[in-house]
Picture 1 (spheres, rainbow, N blue to C red):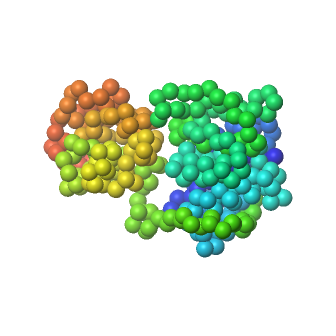
Picture 2 (tube, rainbow, N blue to C red):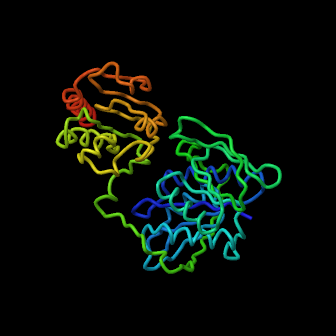
Picture 3 (cartoon, rainbow, N blue to C red):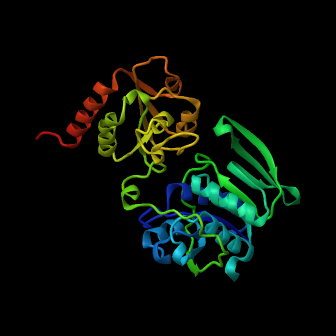
Length: 339
């Protein structure tokens, strides 16, 4: 038996995403008490091959076997095809690792969608956004999971074999295993059914470049207070100087000022940066659900009563049109001191 973890790579295929490293750490917590191994299912490796950096990351995460799929014409994100591949691995293990006691994925858009498809294919229940999971008596799983965008937690019992679980973004840290594993890479080509490739997505080179919002250590966020599409240029410049990513509130995407892929919140991306600099954002519940896992929140806002200030460690009450350019100038001066 094994704990099978859906493991995604960064768009360039070089290494494992931060969200998947967290899912692998969660998988170790399930496998350890039962004396099982952790197995990775890598379904998005370029040319069905793992780069050396990805291999090193998987070994450091304690993965014994990485099943690397050759999806042929299904290369890219194909949720139903991915679920079909997971179903094959979970039930047979391809005679390499044996069947899975649990299938785990990160609580990202991809992870939630693929495991929902897997539940439909296998007829098994799926528990989303788990914080903890442990085997109970009678083969059931005792779970703690987030509900209502993390505003409450639920104690639940899951009766499924294998258990299908997604991991809440902030449930565990992406920490390596105490002892790295000796990784074996096992290529395979899953058997796909008609219609499995009906829905497919690819990441363009433009969108794939830069720092991922989900994994960025610094996120500079902008809301309605930015004023319009042109107001984001200084925020983008600051994010670039800090080696971070730009994030936005829902109202910004609703207005068409920025693309949805940059949205932070319950219906966008949940972020876990070291620093979240929120500019002109009021702090609606939907937005806070996506950023409360930030280690430090700094707010720039003209409204001293904005709800987001209740969650911030630091705040600047002022016009972001003046504060951000001054901050950009200060960061530039620090990075390029006059000698």
